[in-house]
Image (cartoon, rainbow, N blue to C red; front, side):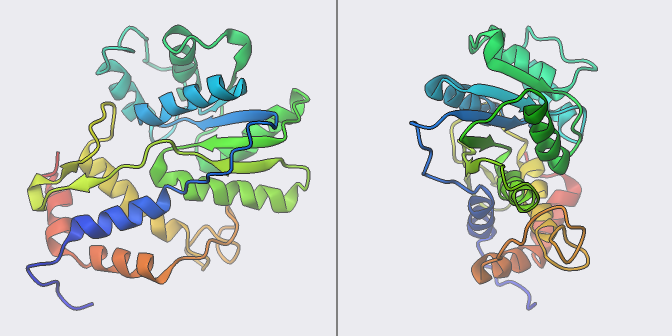
Length: 262
């Protein structure tokens, strides 16, 4: 791809890609019985959104997450939060930490919280959550899925893969709750959203840039023609072009390599 001109706006492309990854559905049916499935992550506004959804829907909150790539970031977010810093994190699973957050700060009763503490990746979040629901004899009419917004679309594609295998899987509704947006230029890039408990900017960009290749339906991707972890995900041309421009952006690569972003 040709070199970018000096007026190239990489923040605009980052926002375009990350907004698409944060798949949002608007069809939560409040008249149907629900389970809120929260995949362990380190984004406090997303976690708190799941607490809110469970409370509003009067739904069971199923928290899935063992020890994985986001666990250390969750520990850090909890330790830096004035609301949650009293919670011990060392050596604990994501589900157990977030479950304590739900009980001691959000005030959800113990009987409304169900923990799945073995999953170490997105695929296991989905498969082990369903296994636990089956073991408990739970039969909700819909699942409200909450995940790190950079992984939301992949998580929904993982549930779609399971739906192809298990016809009785309930309808799944995507609800990340928080959609990040960047502002600024070059080394002054920051989050536009005035929220605490977010990723460091460089971590967010790394996750965003690394996510699209996982969605490919080819030998190297997670789709049916590749590893088979997810159902086929149609990739809009504008998203592919934005990701290609970002991948070819030398200033962005340099800043990430040098960790010059916040």
